[in-house]
Length: 50
Image 1: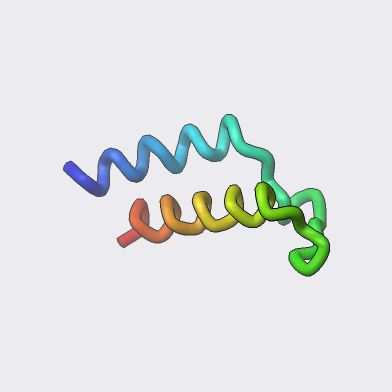
Image 2: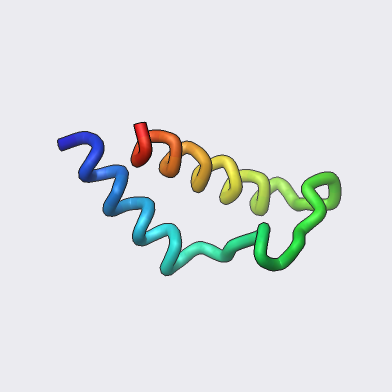
């Protein structure tokens, strides 16, 4: 059940949130908001796979 919720969230993230790796964003120059999005996407992806 928990894994399914995270898989749905991962699909929504892919549709809604921007992909900074495709835009070649430099992490050292990222804003706090961009870092928060990167962290959120990593958290959801980790839980969707695990």
